[in-house]
Length: 261
Image (cartoon, rainbow, N blue to C red):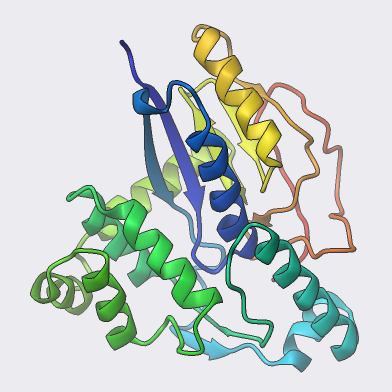
């Protein structure tokens, strides 16, 4: 039986990617043809212009969103509540925010060994549920080893900035060609596109529809205003909606300006 191929563009610094992955996994776990689904994670940097690491303070976070520090803390707490409803640990304290290119290079390494799902989970947990910064190379090595990668190979890749760089750039270029500028983005058999951290029931519905209709044109399904993060590092915050142009499903990939995260 022909497999269904699902590609997921996401970034480790994106809270809605963390939540969306959990929701998608729950839908896939109950899908009757799950054994015939092949999932590939694609690289997408929310803000490749960032320096390697910088702290995200409450004041800086609030300024970016045009909020008071109290409002920013409340929004972060709301995000934590949404994550915890999906069974995810989520620290409310503001995390370091930095360049995720090395993390994506390691995910590309993991993909060559069929371990990208395990490593992405470790990276998400390291970023959102750990007090240690995900941008520390030693922490990255530890997480990669726990995911099943060889320590020496991981250190070699981190030391060589060219290693797997082309694969990361290829994923990002393909996203641009497809018109994907917000994550998480789920592409099923190159025909169905889902933008944002959709509800579990929407993922389930689309999996079923894609399985029975494998010949349709690319179709955007689900609510177009589901939370996500865009290519400028913009993330929707709980209690606030995105801004910009028409967000209706139009049979093409969506553009969602959102808010800078």
